[in-house]
Amino acid sequence: MRRAIFIPLCLAFSVSAAPKDGLIIKTQQGLVEGTLISSGVRQFLGIPYATANRWEAPRPPPFRNTTFNATGFGDSCVQNTGPDNVQFYRLSGLAKDSIIVPEAEECLSINIWTPSISRKQKTAVMIWVYGGGLQFGTSNFVLYNGRHMVQDNEDFLLVSFNYRLNIFGLPNAPQLLDPNQSQNFGLLDIETAVNWVHDNIAEFGGDPDRIVLFGESAGGVAVDAYSYAHSNDTIVKGIIEQSGTLSNVGVSDVIDPSCWNNVAKAVGCGNATTDAQLSCMKAVPFRKLEDAVISTNTIFLPVGDNITFFTNISARSTTGNFLQVPLLVGSTQHEADIFVVALEENILGFPVPVITEQLSDIMTQLQFTCPAGYTAEDRIKANVPTWRYQYQAVFPDISSHPDLRSYHSSEIPIVFGTYEEGFSGSPTKDEITFSRYVQQAWVAFARDPTHGLSNYGWPMYNSTTASLVQLGNPANKTGATFGQGQFTDLSCGAFEALAQLNDQLLGLLTGLSKPKEA
Image 1 (cartoon, one colour):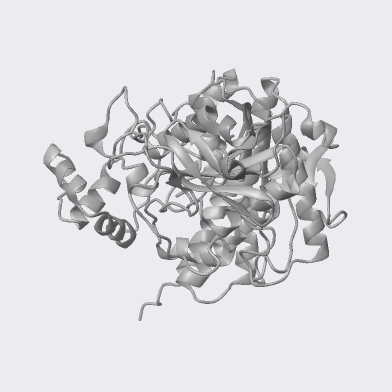
Image 2 (image 1 turned 90 degrees about the vertical axis):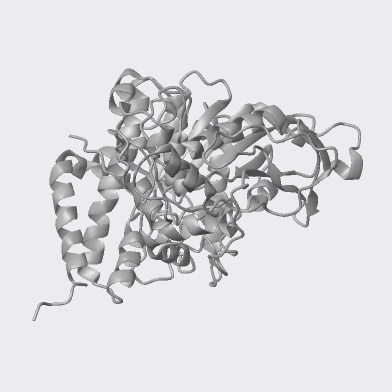
C-alpha cells in the first residue's frame, strides 16, 4: 500500500556571422548581449523571462529598447535560510563560499549556455529546475553552472532559471483561493519559463522541438507536476526526475490557513483572513516577511488546486492521465544521509552512528526509492519509454563528511561536471571519467528521448530484468552495472511498517536532544 509522505519538501546559429560573433541575440522582448567564456561556450545570464507583482501570476516582461546586458546572474528569489536549510547548503556544496545570495522579489530570470561554434542543425535543449523543498534554491548556485556540460558535449545547450519559493511562491492564502486560478505562483513561473524557452531558444541555436525538462528533489517534483498539469503539452519531449516525484508527495484540496496566519501574525497583520489582512501582507517589506517565515519555522507547500497541482495523482497515474513522453527517473542509494546528519548537527551537536544509518536507509526507501519505482511502473503501464537509475557513487571530495555516502544531491556535481567548483577537495581520476559517462547519458536522452539511452547501452526499465542502471556501483566505478529493480524495492511492500519504524527512530533521535527532567 502506498502512503503519501508529507515532506517540507540554442539553435543553429545563422550561417552568416552575427554581431559580436553571436553574442547579441534578438528575443521577443528585445536584444540581449552575452559573453564568450574561455571554455568555448556562449553564456547569457539573468535574462528576464517574466515579471510579477507579489502573489500575482507571472506575465511577459516589457519590451526593451536597449540591449540587455546578460553577463551576470539575476537576483535570486527570496530564500528561506532556516537552520536546516543552512546545514544542507553547507554539507551539499551547493553554495561554496556563502549561503547569502542577492535576493529580490523581481527575480524571474533565465540563463543559457550554448555552443560558440555555428552549426546548421539546431541543438537539443535541457531546462534545469532546481530543488530546495520549494523553500530555497536558485539557478546561480555554483553546482548548477551549465558551461561544463555544454563544453564537453555536442548538439546540446542548457537552460536554467529562477522561480518563486516559500510564502512568495506558494502563499496558501485563503483570500487568494479561486477555482479558476492557481496561487501556486512558483509552479506558474516554471510553466512561463518553459514557454519562454520554446518561443526564443531558436535564436540561441536551440531546437524548440527538442526540449527536455529535468530537475532534482523539489525540482523533480515540479517537473512531475508539470507532466500532470500539461498532459497534452507539445513543448516538452522528455522528462528527467532526479530524486523527486509526485509519488511521495501528499496534498490536500483544502487550504490550511495556519501557515499563512502564522506569518501574518508575526509581521503585525493579524490572523483574521480578511481582505484587509491580505492588503497588509502585500505592503510588508519582503525582508520582514522572509524573517517571519524563518523565525516561525513555517513551510509553504503547493495548494491542491487541480490546475497546477492535483489531489488525485494516484487515480491519474492509474489511468495514464499525464504527459506521455519518455522518462528517466531515479534516486541516490543513500538519499537521507544528508538530512539525518543535518538534523543531528542542528539538534544534538554530535553524531549517533547506528541511528544515523538505520534512519537514513528507511527514510531513503520511503521518500525516494519506492516513489521512483512507483513512478516508473506507472509510466510503463502507459507504454511510455522509461529508464530508471540508482546513483551509488561515493567520492571523497563530494562526500566529505564521514556519515555521508551517496546522499541526496550528490549526483548533481557529477551530472553538471561542477565537482571542482562546490567542494574543497580534488576530484579523483575515476570521478572525472564517471562524470563524463553520466553527462553523456543525460545528453543522449536529451538528443533523442525515445532511443538515446537504448543506443547508449541502457535497457528500458523492467523491474524483473537487469535494467535498473546502477551508476557508480563498486563493480564499475566509472560507469554502470545493471540490477533488478524488484530487489531494490523489496521493502516497499511493507510501506506502512517502514513508516512506523521511521517515526520511531526519528522520535528516538530527536528525544536525545531534550533535557532530562529533574
